[in-house]
Length: 474
Ligand code: AMP
Ligand code: MG
Image: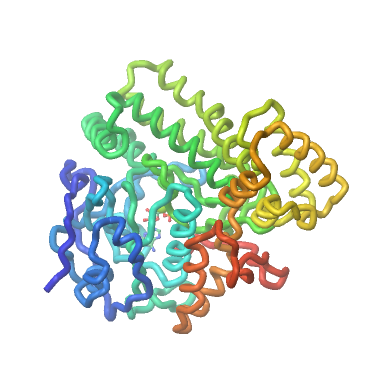
């Protein structure tokens, strides 16, 4: 018996030119690496059924679950600033959408499920490394309260994937509020397809902006969501690494965990991606890139917006929305519950001290909670001077030290998915041991708790352990 899922496929009801209908390519021998039971429950899916043989066949793309309407979505995008007129799901297939018990709608997508008309030179496959990396990092982001796509399952295919060497193949089941990107709008704009742009706006309103009425409202909604998202990344030291317009969602969720990384040592210009030679997507450039991408979205929506000044105004609001959200994230990280002029300078003051000597981003902020941050930084004198300013500022707060410690520990995690730990878990998984992967996921499901038995995962890498670069990992 094949798996039944309660699908209701609104994207598949859009006109044909939004996608290509096709099924996943079956694989030799599916094996379950991970099933996210908590997420299954949240979606109203039966975890036991997903873990069954029929479930495994569905998660590997070998059997279509009942109610699925599989398709590959088309989109375009600017990659590192260069225009690609047609990208699309080259290694992913949308099975369909489910409506969770709370009424929220989610895409269920297989990633690594075989070639599509958008694969270009690619094989449509993924190997175990990037599948597990996306699983770990996207689930960690969710636990860190950062809007993100989620990972429902990871399965092995029993087939090799050929990169520089043969590697074990895998398929990730990705869950997202939708997979609509800035690049989806760009595609139809570049095709002069006015009707499709109208349909897409109506679809986005239904899914993400029920209060919106016009294309301008949709633009404003995306601007607001991205202005809230990027500060959340920055608050946990996250570098996306490949903020191309096809990797920026309309929903405001983080998507596409390719060459991303959480910083260990802080530096505002930190870059990990091996292909980002210019540092276009460096840590502190992320808000500027977001604005650049949103400007592309605005341009793509212009055929539907008469109010040119309104569109310009929506874009112009981004810096101030970003700044307000950034302040709110970092104020909380200093234990500040009120707003006072000069808070931005106080925050920057600490970041500058951290940048000198590249203090560990996560551990320095976490150490503010028990007032041991001085041990984390190199320039102790500068830190002491900053600490006096911080103490004076805290005196203006009514919160008790207990409340403050609670706020600090709730906003600055003890644990993040450190790149060297992810790599270690992947190496073990490839040799058949999923223990490290499972332990890392376990630990990262409560990143704000005292690490306890997971203290080793809070330790920054030694120079020998450090992984200086991440790869696009396709
Ligand atoms: P990304 O940089 O991961 O956002 O991918 C950019 C484009 O390349 C998207 O259209 C992907 O679907 C496509 N792509 C990436 N890897 C593969 C692959 N192994 N096979 C086919 N298409 C791929
Ligand atoms: Mg992508």
